[in-house]
Amino acid sequence: MPTNENSTGVFYLPHHAEKKEHHGKTNWRIVFDPSSSEGNSPSLNDVLEMGPNLLPEVLANLLHFRGHPVPIIGDIQQTFLQLSLDQKDRDLTRFLWTPKTIKATTTPQMRWLTYRFTCLPFSLTCSPFLLSVTERELATMCTERYPNFMDDFVAGAEDGKGAISIYYEIGALMKTIKLPMAKWATSCEELKEIWKAECQGIQRMMQALGVDWNKESDMLSVDPTDILDKTAQGPATKRQLLQTNARFYDPLGLFSPVSAIAKILF
Image 1: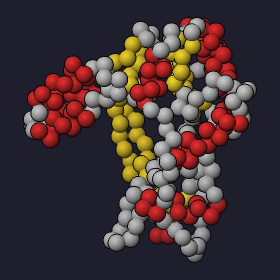
Image 2 (image 1 turned 180 degrees about the vertical axis):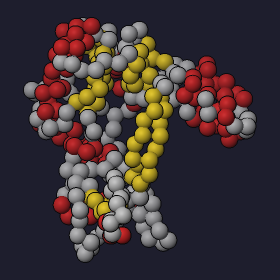
Image 3 (image 1 turned 60 degrees about the vertical axis):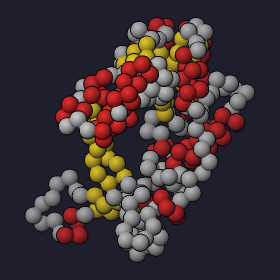
């Protein structure tokens, strides 16, 4: 959305492309950096309030997730972009873009287009709080009607019937404020049949709060290639050893006998 250059209270977000490889798949995304600054001027994140941390504990959620015979997870589609920015704040999220094609007749002014966010960007320091407080308000409003709602949806049921009930409850709840759910996953065969009828894609491997989860075998795992591939590319140094160990994400401590080797080596 083009904007007026004469307005005050303006900040331009730098951005770059980021490549991420996982399980043999390569994804590209645009990363905006509101923490960048020039000289002694503050960045956009420097002048924003972070707000209290309302996110649930990862360890508690994973224990809850594994404490039921039938686990089920879901994710809000394009989470932060579902929340609108106030009109007066949008000029603080401007960014420059180049047209898809540049012709010989394109003027210098047209080689750079100015856009701005109308929805909440992911990278603002206040974004996690604004999302969490929105979900909590929704949960408070609808507690009696939808008792199965959780802030960060990782849940479980005692049987297939319970998992199906959770799926329909959460979907109906999130539709009340137009937050579509996506990336559903479960080990429940009855629920998978419903998703097939709804033409939803079903993947064998998913992530539950950052931990790889095989839905077919219902097991948590760590992919060693994600950790070790970059290690083999460079010389063996203490810095590289620390970087390798930092990529070992294991909040439950299930793989401590393996990750402890890197700590002992260091």
